[in-house]
Amino acid sequence: MNWQAVSFDWNQARAFLVTAEEGSLSAAARSLGLTQPTLGRQVAALEEELGVTLFDRVGRSLSLTQAGLELLDHVRAMGDAAGRVSLTASGQSQAIEGQVCITASDAMSAYYLPPVLKRIREVAPAIEIEVVAANALRDLRRREADIAIRHVRPEHPDLIAKLVRETSARLYASTAFLESRGRPTCASDVSDAPFIGFEQSGRLLAGLNGRGLTLTKNNFKLVTDSGVAGWEMVKQGLGIGVMVEEIAAITPEVECVLPDLDPFQVPIWLVTHRELHTSRRIRLVFDLLSEALA
Image 1 (spheres, rainbow, N blue to C red):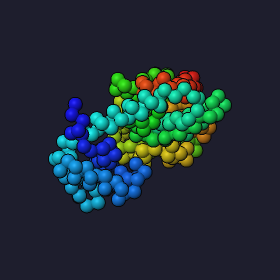
Image 2 (cartoon, rainbow, N blue to C red):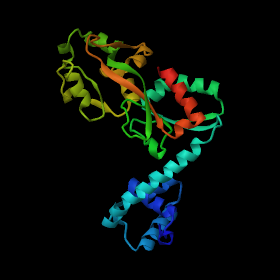
Image 3 (cartoon, rainbow, N blue to C red):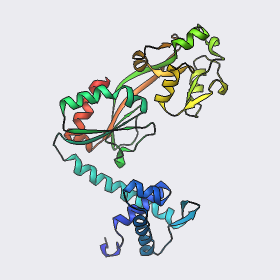
Image 4 (cartoon, helix red, strand yellow):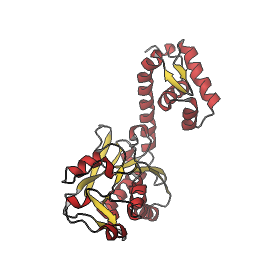
């Protein structure tokens, strides 16, 4: 390899990559913990070094030029490689201390994790836990988290996934809601009932109708992308919603609606990176999560 031909540095390449992914210099600067002028100088230096324009300004955002698009895949591969170097180095640390980042849905983070976190504190008080409560999937390969709790199995070969168990989700409503409207005994009894929707994908509507209900979009006057917010709406009598059985079981003010309806099967996967899995602190947290969630 002609190393003398490699004339730009990783900081410039990283500045370009994060700016391309975030869509603006200000967002990229926040992600990297830099000031916007510093990041802008790094991108400009890379453009000058390569003799190309990488971005066109569109309003307050940036758009990749053709040269930027051609460079992006190569720089993204560099970013993945840099991430793997960091993963390997951190995985060699055998001390039961340091930070572990867990990502899970907001409902899982709020209702499932606290007892597990208490157990981790008892077993390994030197471990620092960061919980990323987000319904969007985080990329473990790029170290956006160390361990993820997911409801779908990841397909990337660099990730290790363990099916902890499967649980079930059913329809629930508050006792006050059911007392005011009457407790339904068949699918037609809820055809005009208000439901709490989750996101705008239509998958919930299709799934419920596939179980014998006859609902339309008009039943979903309230829609949220937050499991915690949706569950609170159910608890306060705003409509019927779907929740896993374990969370419903610790919510005394709700009742199962149409308990004979086929439930939704919800797998619980624990996922971590192949190299991080060799780290004692990651393994300890992974095993404690596996034990508790099972």
